[in-house]
Amino acid sequence: MAGKASAGDDSGGKSMTVFQVDDPERKQSIAREILEALPDWFENTEAREQYIRESRERVFFAAEREGRTIGFLCLKETGSCTVELAVMGVRMEYHRQGAGRALFQAARDYAAAAGYAFMQVKTVQMGYYEDYDRTNRFYRSLGFREFEVIPSLWGKENPCQIYILSLRESPREVILNRRSYRGKYKPEKVPEADLALILEAGLAAPSGCNRQTTSLIAVDDEALLDRLRAEIDPPVAETAPALICVLTQRINAYRDRCFATQDYAAAIENMLLMIRALGYESCWYEGHITDTDRIGDRLAAILGVPEPYELVCILPVGRAESEPAVPKKKPFEERAWMNGFGNPCRR
Image (cartoon, rainbow, N blue to C red; front, side, top):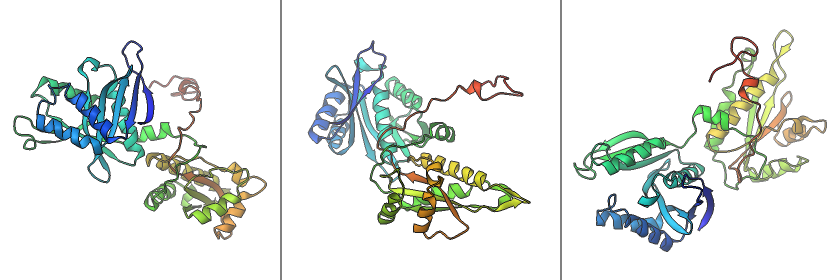
C-alpha cells in the first residue's frame, strides 16, 4: 500500500481511510471481495471475473473503515490525455456515507497530477434500471457530463452511457487556486511544448501603447540551470526543473511615460495562470533578483542577454512535491464594492 490519506464522511464520526494499492494480489483480493458483495450491479459472472482479473494491472484505490475494506476504484488509460474510471464498488451498507466520493477524489487527484486532461466512465443509460439510475445520478453529482450513448456495446437492453469529466480547472478555479509555491519540486522534466504554452500566454498580455517591452527565456538545460542557481544567493527554486526568465526594455510608450513595469507584470500574471492551468506550480521572484546585489544582471550575462534588455524576474516551473501554503486573504466585502466605496457587491 502507498499514499494513505484520511477522508471525511457523514457516518457518525467513524474515520475512513483511502489509499492506493500497489500489490497485484491485494488488488485482486479486494476487487473480488467487494464485487461479489454487489450482485445487483455485478451479476454477470463473466464480466465480474474480467474486472477482477484486470484489477491486478490497474491504478487501484481502496477505502477502509475500522480495519474493514469497504470499497475500491480502478483507473485505466484509454488515451494519452484520457483515463477511464474502469470500475468502482462500495459495499451496500456503506452507500451514501462518503466512500464513493472519497475514492473518486483520490482518483481524480492522481489523474490530474499524472497530466491527464479527461476522465470518462461508462454505465447503463438512465431510465432502464433503478440501481443504475442511482449510479447515473452519482456520476452527475461528481461533475461528469453526458458524452455519448452506444446502444450496441452491451446489448439493446443495456445501452452504454459514456460520461466525460474535465480534469483541468475552470478559468475561475485557476485564478482562485493559484498560489505562490516556495517548496520543493518533483524531478520530472517539464515538456518543451508546455513551456512554449506558458511563454505564449505571457506574450499575449497587454502592453502600454503596444510597445511589447517584455521578452522571455525558458531554461530547462540542467547544466545551464546549475549555473543560474549558483548566482542566486540566498538560494530559491533549487529543485525546479525549469525556469522562465523575464526580460524588459525601458522604452517610453509616449512622451516621457514608460509602462515597462506594468507590461511585464501583466505577462507574469498570465504565465502564472497558465502554469497553474497545466498542473504546475511557481512563484514570482522579482525583488530578490533586482535588489542591490543585481543578481538579475549576472543571470542575464550567463544567458547572453544584450543591452538594453534587463532581467527582472524568474519564475520556476514544475510539479509541486507538497501542497502550496494558502495565504490568509481579507474578506471580499472589505476590498470589493459596487457603485461607490463601501457599497456591498452581492455574489
